[in-house]
Length: 329
Image 1: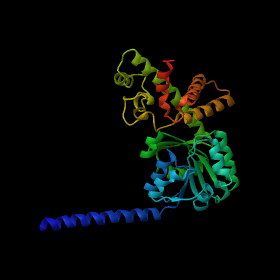
Image 2: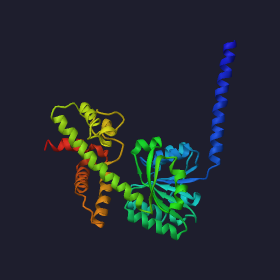
Image 3: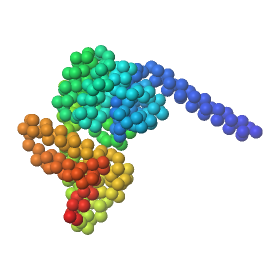
Image 4: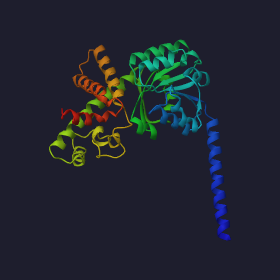
C-alpha cells in the first residue's frame, strides 16, 4: 500500500511539473512580441521551430500550405500570404529559394511591403543577388521599415540544432535588434557591413564550398579506383593537410559517414539546383567586378550539367555519384 501511495505521489508530482512547465512556457511566450516568418521549406521550417522553442509567438506562411503543418502543430499561427504576416508582426524573417521569390514576397500584390508597419524590422535569410537585397532595402525604407540581409551557412542540420552562422548586412545600429532573433536560430551571428555584404560573404562561402566538394569527390573517387578503402582514405585525409569540411563533416561517399545525405541516397541537405543557383550568383558578381574565378566558373558548369542529368533535387554532394557515372561513359 505504501508503495502504491509513493507511486501515486510520484506520478502526481510529474504531472504538476509538466503543467508548471507548460504554464511557464505560455507565460514566457506571452512576454515576447510576435515574429513573422515567410518560407517554411527545408531551412525555414526548423528555423521557425527554434523561434517557437525560444518562446516567440510565430505568424507564418508559405506558398505550399502543406509546409505549414508542422509549425502550426507547435503553436504557430498560419495566414494566407506575406501581407497578412506584415499586418500582424513588426519583425519578419524570410527564407526563400531565389531572387525572384524575394522580390515577389516583398513587393508583389500580396507582398510584405503592402501592409508593413513603420519601424518594422525585415530580415531576409535567403541567398540572393546582393543587388536585389539593396533594392529591397530601398523599397522598405520608403515604407518606413528596415531591411537587413542575413543569409546562413550550416545546412539543415545546423538549422535544426540552432547552430547556423548568420552573415548580416544592414544598418549597424539595427544589428542588435536582429541579433536578438537570430541567436535563437544560430550560434554565430556576424555583422558584415551595409546591406548586401551578408550576401557577398555567403556567395563567396558557397563558391568555395562547391569547389571543395568537387575536389573531395574527385580525390575519394581516385583513391577508391587505386584500391583504397574509402573510410581509410577519409581518415587519412582528415588527419592530413587535405582536410576540409567536405571530407570530415559532409563526406560525399556513401557509407563513409552516418547522418549525411550521401548515406541516404543524397536525399535532403542542400540541393544541387540551389548550389547551381548560388554559383550563378557568384559568376554574375565576378563578372560585374571583373574578378577572375576560373575554378568557380568550372564548378558552376559542373553543377549545371548535374541539373541537366537528373541530379537537380539531390544533395550537392551527389557530385561524387555524378563523377562515378561519368567515368563509365
